[in-house]
Structure formats: C-alpha cells, structure tokens
Length: 290
Image (cartoon, rainbow, N blue to C red; front, side, top):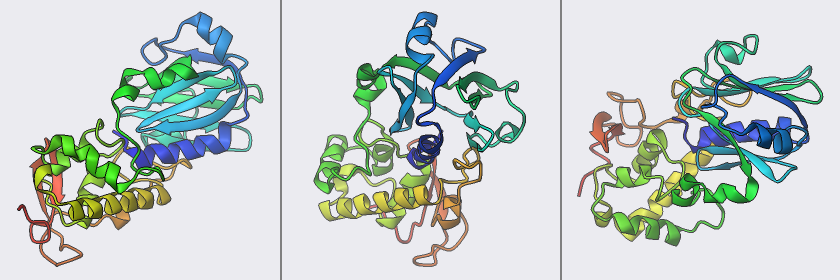
C-alpha cells in the first residue's frame, strides 16, 4: 500500500502534466475499476478540463472544470501512466506496463485528451478504482469523514498532534501512528523511521509517552516524510516516482529493512519484531520500552 510520500510524488507528476488538458474520451474494461454511471461520464467527464490534482491522505483527486472530480485509489498494484508525443512517465507498481506499449492486459481505464495524449490507469489485481463525483461531495465520502489531519500541513501544530493521540492512551505508539483516523498517510516505513528518530520504542503505550517525547516525534515524522517526498518516495517493492524511476528514500533509511545492521546512532544491532501486526524495525538499545 502506498504511503503519503509516494502518493504525493504521483500527485506532483500528474499536476505538472495533465492540468489544462481536456478529456475527449474514456474507455474501461470493468465496472469495479470505474464504477460510474454512463450519464455522469457523458455530462461531467467528457469535454471537461483538468483544473487541479490534489491528494488527501493516500487518495488522489483530479478536479475538473465541470465541478466534478475523479477520486482515484491505486491500492496495491495500481499505476498511472501518462503518454504524449512530448512526455512519457509512469507512477505506481513497477512492472513492464510503465514502459511497455499501452493499453495492455492490466489497463483498466484509458483517458484520452483532445491533444491525443493519454492517461492510463493500470491495475493487475483490480483493487484500485477511479470514481467520478461532484467535487463538493468528495469531503463527504466515508473515508474522508474518518481520516485524520495531514501531518505536513503548515497549520497542523504540535499541540494538535498530541491531542490526536490522547484518545488512544492504551494503544502502542506504532499502532496509533498507523491509525489513519488519528493521522493521515503514515504507513510502516515512516512509522519505524520516525519512532527511531524520536528514540521511542514502537511498543510504548501512548499514555506513557511524555509531552516532550511527542514533540520530538512530531518533528521527526515531518522531517522523515518531507525527505521521502524530496527523494521521490521509497523503493518499497511497488513504488516508483513520477518519472518512472525508483524513489531513493530507502538509501537514507536508518532502521527500516536494516535488521542485523548496526544502528547509525549507537552501533547496536537493529532488530525486527512484530508490533500492531506489522514487521517492525527497532534498535532495542536506543529505543527502550519504559
């Protein structure tokens, strides 16, 4: 599953390439991937111009001139591949569809623009989807109602960060970080990395984390995720950046997938344990359960 930095990387690539283009036609191969009424497609998608590409948590939102939006979730194996006579890029699961001839057997939806450029939504496992809906209704989607605030927004303060966790005092700090209703977009990689940076053991109960420790975690989480965005995301098996190249963040990871290697802070061996049902990387010397 993509994490916030990977989806933000996709958003930036799409925003650069498709804003201002007008949709001439769309074809799809199954209703699960494109669950939209034909009458809505005819009136609100065809002939519409892309005005913005946004992100909320791990979901992409393509706003159209008709005051409708395409809400897209790539899930596990989704790709978005743009092709024109001048530009070509792929973002998502790194199989050959990123660079091969399209459409292919994984292509679920093809958007053709009036300049004969194309945006392909590929998805081998058919878990992803692209839903068309009024832009004003997007915030009312069940997911949008439940998801927590964006951790990188300028107006998201450390005080708000601490308050969000206060409702999970008996939960492990890692489980709370992964809870999308508390904070949006944080997954396994960046939870492990930020907890290491804050010297917090992933099994620490939220109620045992001090205010000063939360302040450190807030700073570390934002720093880790901003670095990941700058590096184009991680190479966590199924994500590449908006130019179809693997992200480089994992070159800078301190603990994630480094079990058996020395901790870059104290030199002790990094361990892999299981917390909140997820493989978890920790330095048991630096990050002590208290």
